[in-house]
Amino acid sequence: MAAPAWQDSRFMKAARREPVDRVPVWLMRQAGRYLPEYRRIREKVSFLQLCRDPRLASEVMLVTIERLPVDAAILFSDLLLILEPMGLELRFGPDEGPTLRNPIREPGDLARIREWEDADSLDFVWETVRRTRAGLPAEMPLIGFAGAPFTLAAYAIEGRTSRSFENVKRFMYRYPEAWDDLLEKLVRSVARYSMAQYESGVQALQIFDSWVGCLSGDDYRHYVLPHTRRLLASLPPEAPVIHFGTGNPALIPLQAEAGGAVIGVDWRIRLSEAWSMIGEDRGIQGNLDPAVLLGPEETVRRRTREVLAETRGRPGHIFNLGHGVLPSTPVENVLALIETVRDWDPEQLP
Image 1 (cartoon, one colour):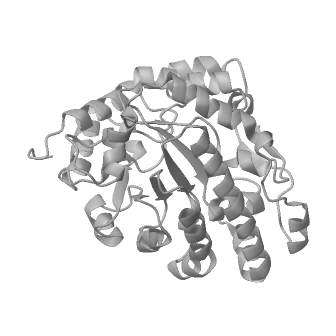
Image 2: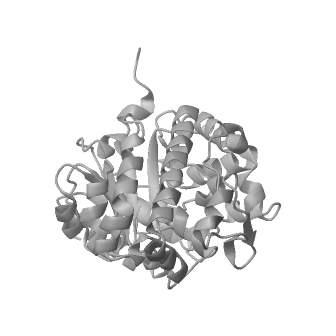
């Protein structure tokens, strides 16, 4: 039987650290508020309604792919959806972002947190995967995603976006046994959730540890690494896993130790330095600062070439931002970034 067309795509080959004719590119939050196509759909429904409607959620990504000549699509969904069937009340306000109305604050609160096992409770996610996969070009991979155990636990404990992370750190330090119990529930739940996405039709997975940068290296090693390692080791080996962290370059070697075929890094470190910390046996994803896209086009192109020059086309590099596209980003700058990556010659200077 012939291999699927996406199997030999630039993205999948780069994830396997195989040579490619050019560096593949996709963008976190490539379907977002900066696109008029997305805004037109959002005028009709709330964010949560959009996530729960497979027809609209798949349409959002498919119209984005029509607009942007990227090398991979990513499922349109949200990290926190898995927390609802686990017993947490999720809301998205128009200006405040996600909130959980019944956060975990004491060990006794864990009694109301259920391990996620009911696939039917998130059937709209699997249907969104199937519809998106069916609408994509055959050669384009679809990336699924989930939150890492620490980031999901931090949301569950803080209840909203935080700068100090005092509630999660308090819980982690005061109640280490309850902390381990919570993270192990999340490990098993996220493993099932990721496998269900894979079985529904994604070709790769990204695990987002968006809040882990608030930790020191010692705390990461003690409180997080064992759990994240168990999660990543449990994911299907046929689907390359991108392990993305942000906020603290000192954690990159530990992030690599935890696992992942590709390590995603943000803009706070040079890509070449990060790769030397990760090791020759891993791919790397990143890492242009999303704010660069708010500047003039010539700056976008120059800074994009500078990132590319850090790896000189070495197999295993997937170009991306160091975080998601910002809502005020001009579409023309996103297109200029993608065009620069697609046209870049490893022999040329930045």
